[in-house]
Length: 142
Image (tube, rainbow, N blue to C red; front, side, top):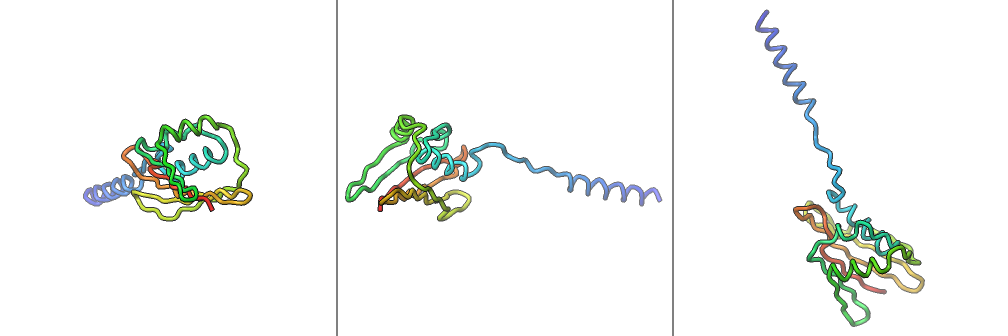
């Protein structure tokens, strides 16, 4: 009887430890590529630049194809431009979608529909050691 009680207690303890295992829930905003892409969309279309600098990697490159001209910017130039245009809402309709995603890289497409043309932004986000960061944005105008 003593052995049965010991075995039953051991099984109950094992089950309690297994069921009570808690997974850590992260409240780190950079733990998701969706935060970075939403921050980018808010900055370029609505002028809300609060977290923009934190979601752009220091080596990020921004390129625009305008006609036959390719114009490139780095993080500092992009953040300065966004800050100069803070709180300026664009007269456009924005749609975004995830083109491809895995544990390390996500590619999103952000279309900004203006009267007469569309600006399509292909945004590459990389899971760096310090969260998801925008590493490349390529914009084309149609």
